[in-house]
Amino acid sequence: MSEDIEIQLRRALRPVEPSAGFAERVMRALPERAPRPALAPVTVLRPAPRAGLWRTLSAPSALAASLVVAVMLGQHVGEQVGREQTEREQRAGLAARAELMQALRITSRKLDLAYQAVNRPAPAPPPAEENRS
Amino acid sequence: MNRVESSTVVNEAAHADTDSLLRRARDGDATAFAGIVRWHQSSVFSIGYRMLGRRDAAEDLAQDVFLQLYRKLDSIESFEHLGFWLRRVAANLAIDRLRRVPYTTTYTLDAVVEPDAPEKTEDHLMTRALTRLLGELPPGPRAVMVLRYQEDRDVAEIAAALDMPVNTVKSHIKRSLTALRGKLVGTQLITAENLFEGNGP
Figure 1 (cartoon, helix red, strand yellow):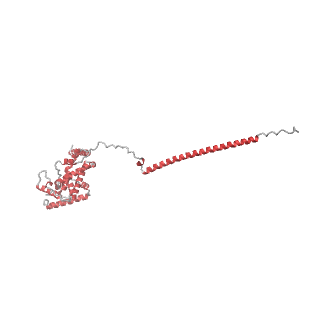
Figure 2: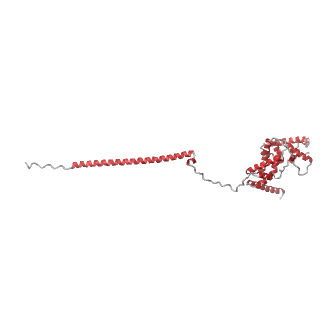
Figure 3: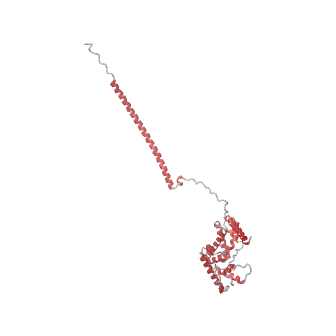
């Protein structure tokens, strides 16, 4: 018994086979495994179902959109108010001009009358009493 | 073609063949997976058998190892990696089972490998004694000895497979050999003068 124990160990630990049909039993125990497709699956991009505008926006985006809408609305209202004020002013101006023209027409008529009165020829003197004398 | 060149060609052919087997198994080819099981069943079963000491327990363990392999096939990079992975999982699974059920391995009569050719009675007794004594080692050192002397793995690979430092593996081998020699002296199968022959790796 002079052989080294390591050689004896290798001899004692020779691989052993499992009982017959082991591989078949393993195969029967395997879970179903779908074979790999030849090509990678194509990713189909579907459009997201339509949701309300505010549901699709995040809070900061919604706030920004609200501000933009408010500014645009304010601008529109401002323009409208300005336009109305201008029209009002134009109407007032036209009325004032009409009143002025009326006043001028009256004044002109009065002046004409005065002129006529001034430039009317003096009436002839009455017939003399010298014939009687 | 000389003998070395011939051997290289055969190895390359076998390598290409095994890699193709692995690739087909990964693609869902059940026949290829069965081929892998047959290729490695002896190694995986033997690790379980030497660790647990019973054929039924070893077959359960081997089956669990191959089921795990089936789920992890995509992570196996090559046939070499496959062999390492199987040894690693088998050894660690056996250690876990021994720790969960802390029984002393009791080898049944079928635990001793029957010699292929008629052996001297003395050798056969030695084989029986070593197999029995190996079963008395704690799970960790036992796994180290099985991977070293059954699977013929080097110290670095054993360390990687069992998540142990290399020096721990060397220490386990040295201490286990010493313990086995000491116990064999007790069985009269080894004499005191060759007790300290060889110091392992």
